[in-house]
Length: 271
Image (cartoon, rainbow, N blue to C red):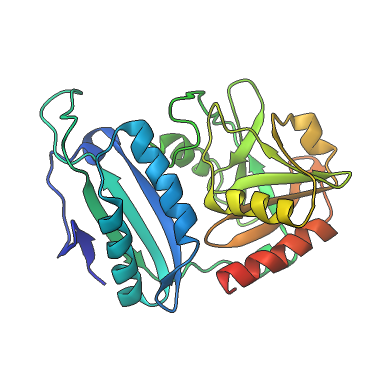
């Protein structure tokens, strides 16, 4: 299926695009089933917040309409929505009123071994650390070199994801997922006010757990807290939830709360 640029089929963008030159923009990766973009409201809510914080001028009604039309044409697969600040002059200075460039790309449904969700996975302990930048924290911006470097650290099939810490040694997230742990019935995920990506599935799980009366907390997480957890899992909006069985010398069992939340996510993602 052709990509769309500003609502029209296209296979290229201008060389002066600020997304290419500076990573100046945002993106969302959206699962599509039977022509419907899943968790769309949460994706667009995060995108809107990113536009606000980066001062990107976007028509969110047009974005929603284009995503719905593209998803309907895609059918089943993964839709990537990219917003850039459009073309630039030389240098970092920007035109504050310039409209964003909208890019839509489609791909086949993501495929992962079913065992990842059933038996759980191992995390690779990444040496690459996440830099702390509160102005960008939580956003899914186009600067993803930290994740690129972290993902290059392992090639073996024994590890399905990587564990990323910040510069102070706090546990933050996976390379392409958010991380939760369970301890004495409390569902805990990392505070992402300094760095990390505030995932759409992370937000959905926090809301679902609160609706079910499950105690939840968003706070700094240490490696020692991770080691002492009763359950650990990672999540994103494409594959749902993968239980985590181990990371380096640490190990965990797949627990009941992980399984309960997996059932909710399967219904949301139709997997």
